[in-house]
Amino acid sequence: MRIAYSVETVRNAERELMARLPEGTLMQRAAHGLAVACAGLLGDLRGRVYGARVVVLVGSGDNGGDALYAGARLARRGAGVVAVLLAPGRAHAGGLAALLRAGGRVADDASGVPASGVPAGADLVLDGITGIGGHGGLRADAARVARAARESGAVVVAVDLPSGVEADSGEVAGEAVRADVTVTFGTYKPGLLIDPAREHAGAVRLVDIGLGPRLPAVPEFEALQHADVARLLPVPTAESDKYRRGVVGIVAGSARYPGAAVLAVAGALHGGAGAVRYVGPGSGAVIARFPEALVHEGPPSKAGRVQAWAVGPGLGEGADADGGHGVAEVLASDVPVLVDADGLRLLDAATVRSRTAPTLLTPHAGEAAALLGVPREEVESSRLTAVRELASRFGATVLLKGSTTLIAAPDKDVPVRVNPTGTSWLATAGSGDILSGLSASLLAAGLAPRDAASVGAYMHGLSARLASRGAPISALDVAGSLPEAWRNVRG
View 1 (tube, rainbow, N blue to C red):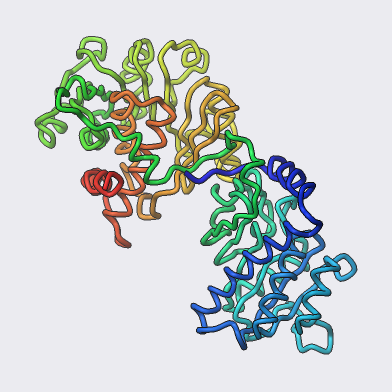
View 2: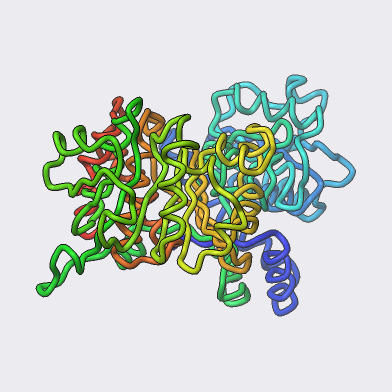
């Protein structure tokens, strides 16, 4: 499992560790790991470090020091290293001295460095402009250099975090460095996992500098990996039957959107449910595609016993009059309920909070914005704030879909989960309906809402990757690849 901690937590751990070490040890550990990573990249790029051209962008903080010391190590291996000082009077003195002793140099008017600050022909640019304590976008001079680095064709390596992004929230308030690789120290930071900042980070490499024992046992953020998901996936035993494996109820679809019913049922059937009970006007379409489904015209309370419900996909604009009764009945049940799509429009926070059984909400950014009464752009730029506020307001687990899918529990002390799987080809009609059925099937199998949402999002994204392999896919392709994703995780 990948875990991440806030800036305050990381700073506290660093202070505690530095108090037990000789001065400068922590920075030297970071610089060593950074230099090793850069040497590896240069080796891949040109076969060796000797003769490589490296530009170090240096701000006034410790990240600038890390970058300078790493530059010194590369210079000692024969790289030509030029430091561009964005705050000349406040650059890390020890790091600057080390670079100069190793044969590196500082850019000045006589060095042939263009106004952009990035010499032509650079192989690698180290971004040490700002660190995890930075806030807001880059200032004009730093932004100009960051753009030049991106346009230079060099490999851009961010030190700990791309300069200009918010470490704690993943927000990008202005211009920021776009890195090909980020070398981070001690632990992941939230901004490396959460969009839009995640897109600026590129490939992330973690360097151990000894913080682990001084970080809290419970992280602030988690990202599941294969082994974590494998432990959570329900597997039937020899004594299992379809009822013991979990029966999931689906209230979805309408005369206008019968496909949503088919897709939600597809997600549930491929998601491990022992049986699926479908309730709604799409019975004909569902049976035509999935004869194993159990269909009922409704209401949900008359459809038979289920271990979890999914409600909302494709109910349409008439949901207030028709599907609204189904939403209310499902919410009145004593089993876990997943609410998605049109069902979210009918939610009342007090009703959801009063439920004795768990509730899982799965909005996309537009639906989340409507629930919160804010513009969609605000949700997209502040995804972490939005998912936490929704979970608190409704007293429910919330899965916020998007380029970064986030899962938050109503208890603010429980780590927010960040889903690491997916592909841009997943942005296709009906893919959210598959996720609804899949996650509801995991609820029916007995997983807690946070685990059902996390595993559902993980398998959904992995299935899309396997189905796509770089090509367009449909929602049903995602459902059809779920068995392969299951084998991939379990195997």
